[in-house]
Image (cartoon, rainbow, N blue to C red; front, side, top):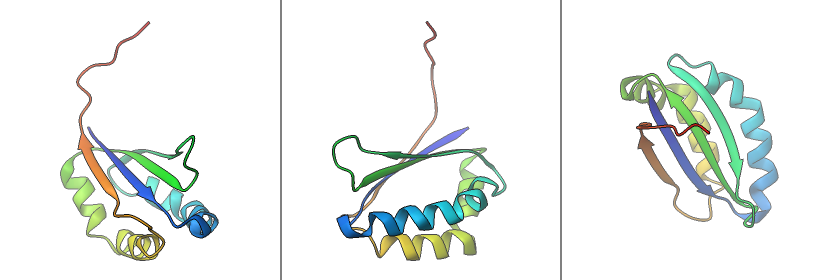
Length: 99
């Protein structure tokens, strides 16, 4: 399982537009072959900073999504709203500590 975190900083006046666009595409992204989980987070203090957390079956499945028309259209729209360069991280869970 590959966990992908993408941190995006938007122009303050573009936040509502981003949220509308995310909500109109979230099910298509989540239902893309190989995607097992999708979350959208918002920074507690900087309301124009968002992160997506997605779980992918493998790096190959993530790359298939990144090569898809869905990703190309979503990313083209979204990146026009950025005020800073996004940051992306791919990780795997090593351990989960239970109570």
